[in-house]
Image (cartoon, rainbow, N blue to C red; front, side):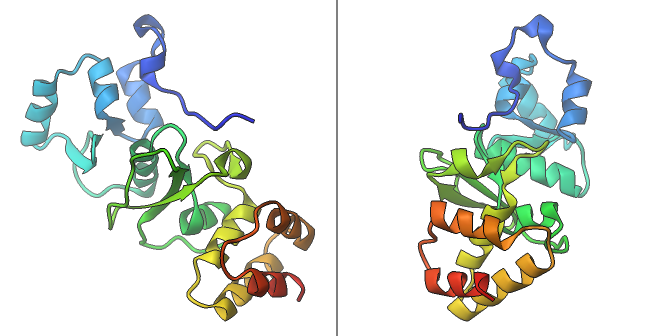
Length: 204
């Protein structure tokens, strides 16, 4: 299964590209430097818009084409665009998108391949790395980790084994994710920490 890739304006002929306004609508006003250049904006033009306050830098080479606070969809798009073509929402952010956790004011969490140069830029984005993205990703409108992998990632990120156990019990018991599917995920991608604690949570 190939790694998930998103549409890039650089990869199609100019006459076939959607209009600038369509692009802005699809990405909630977020654009990358490469997209700006591919739509005819020079480096000087980008600098002028930033200095005039019409656009602003959100993350390295990622810009908002509006002023004011970034709504959640724009924050998610900015994080994914910063992470690159194979970036996916993960951990708490993916859990919020799946409805496992309430939406809160946290950095957007993404996972990228180990070959990616993206790094965390708090408070905007936290970057994780994985060699298993081809197996753990769902190609939703905004790509994210699968339900089972999201829960597993959250458990591994806990501070203690007991917390990992309780998180597994809590999220599995009040979601549509089955214990069987979690066990399959556990076997295919054994967690690098809290294995016994996570298995204990799946046996309750």
